[in-house]
Length: 287
Ligand SMILES: C[S@@+](CC[C@H](N)C(=O)[O-])C[C@H]1O[C@@H](n2cnc3c(N)ncnc32)[C@H](O)[C@@H]1O
Image (cartoon, rainbow, N blue to C red):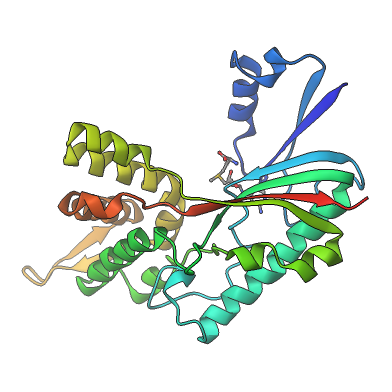
C-alpha cells in the first residue's frame, strides 16, 4: 500500500536538515520501506494542516506543551509550575492550555479518517500535579534574579524569561467531554518518566564537571532562543570606577548559562531527572 509521510513544524523550522536526514540516513523509512513518499508542511498545529478525512495515522512528540500564545508574563517565576493554584496567573495559563488542547484535538479529528489514530507523546505533570522539570526551572529563575540584584538584568528582562509552555495533567489530557465533542476516544494513556542519559553517564564516570557541561549544553540548546530574546543589549554602571560597561544580550546569555553550570556542578544529584515526564496517548476517531 502506498504511504505518504507529511512532516509538520513551524515555518521557521530547518526543513532542509530534515530532508537531508530523511534522504541520506540508511535507516530512513525511504530506504527501508517500499512505496513511501515524503512531503513537509510548515503550518502551526494550531491550524488545519491536512485535508478533511485524509490522515490514517498522526504522530507528535514533545511539542504540544507549547502554548499558542503567552497568556501573561510572570514576575516571580519562569513558568506556571510555581503559581498558586487559585492565582489569576495560574487561571490564565490553565484556560489558555484548555483552549489550545481543544483546538489541537478539533483540528486533528477533522483531518483523520474515521478509525484513524493520533498518537501523541506530550510533556505532562505526574499524578501529584508536580514535575521534575520544576527544580531546574527554579534554579534558572534564581540565577536570573541574582543577575537582576547585581544590576546586570532589568526587572523586564527577568519577566521576559517566562516560558510559554504548560504541562497538562492526565485529567486535562484525557478530558472525556472534550474528546466526545471531537468524536475521539482514548485507546491508550501511559505515563512515562524518561531516564536522563546524561545523568546515567555521570553515574558511570563520576565526572561532575563533564556532567554539568553536558547537561547545561542540552538545556541551552532548548532554552537559548528564549533567554537570548529576553536579554537586551545594555550598559552597567560600575560602582568602583563610576564608568559604564557594555553588556550585550550575548554576554548576559553566556553568563546566565555559565552560572547555571556552576549550580549543577555544586549538586549534580539534584539534576537526576530534570526533564519533563511524558504521557503517551493514542486517540482513535470514532467510525
Ligand atoms: C522539542 S522539539 C521536538 C521535535 C521532534 N518531534 C522530536 O521529538 O525530536 C519541538 C518541536 O515542536 C515545534 N513546534 C512548536 N510549536 C509548534 C506549533 N505550534 N506548530 C508546529 N510545530 C511546533 C518546534 O518548532 C520544534 O521543532
